[in-house]
Length: 198
Image 1 (spheres, rainbow, N blue to C red):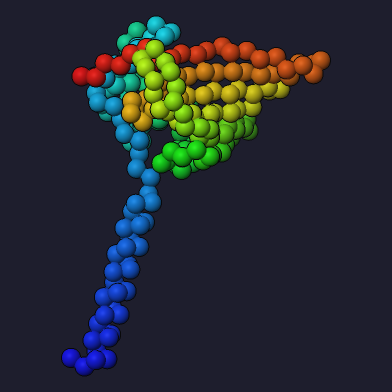
Image 2: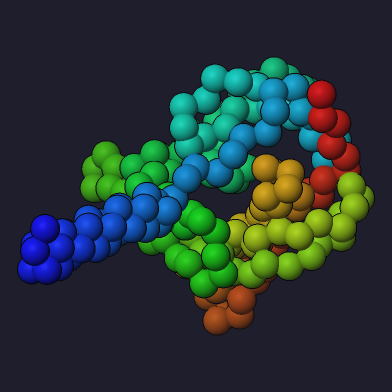
């Protein structure tokens, strides 16, 4: 083999290795779906409700059954329901939050019958330790902000990767009254009281 031919072979091999590395980088950059808890894992909450993980949800959702009534729901990140029209219409947008990282934001929009428009913003607000009755857990704070009339909803879930579910939920509604004052109500909240893994 001549020196020129050997140099050409090395260049071809070098270019091929770059292609393999680029392909590996593309695969690594793709967002894997958040994992689901093992079927029969039971979560109990401070509002006296309990749910159990069950199999059968289409990716990227995880399926849960309410142990108080048996209703099933498919959730993304333990928070966003597949029955929500705005969630279903924006799953590709919500998937951009994976892998979860503080500062990521997803803007959701949907137009319904009669031209009614829905908008919401989901952001990864923080990563923090949260103390709940089940213990101290490291969680991502997922904030859902949605305008509603002259007010807005702020809903927060503390999603814990170690649990594959949320350890805490709060909801707050703010509305600006005719006098210009802001009135705030917090209609719902719960914390994780316990987890039973099969």
